Length: 269
Image (cartoon, rainbow, N blue to C red):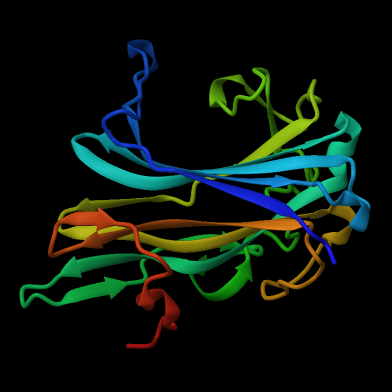
């Protein structure tokens, strides 16, 4: 039986001390980190599944606030990186992400009732679908479940590496398909939208994710959305993007688990 070591480091960051500043020339509003979480996988028992060219993987999840035009927006950024023994070994592995939950609008009526609506769509398996997943589903824009894979450019083309060692900064990163990395470490990112309150209507995100690393050859080139057990993963990380507006307190809150509204079918009252 495969054994793995996953160390979870929860780092709660105060808003006052964790404001990412930009220079004037960048003309970007400051991004305030509200909370960060890091999970680490160390491949200590690689002999059990013949993956000793894989060293480790690290997931970093940041909840943030950004103020644009006087209105705050809230979101989550996921970064997942892994390192192998050599650059040529990087393509031996690939990620698949699974999703559950929804993105929805909410508003408080004149009688005090909170009304919710499915008002958003997502690219999913070659089509456009309501951003609602009541059960665990493969998260992919096409029928190839390989995370951020491209059917024309290649499965790992949009994996990223950074010219500055240990950094995941956008300004110094390269796509794997554009230029081969100089060090055997790559990463992927995901930002599943933002939440905000405008004109008495709140856009809410209530999403759960599982992202798993597999041997690349174990990931089918085509599958269906509900095929979540196509292979045994080397490891999986879980993360969430939860920003739900409390209309009584006039604040966004992070909740454990998905909102009950995300467990209903679209036509269910």
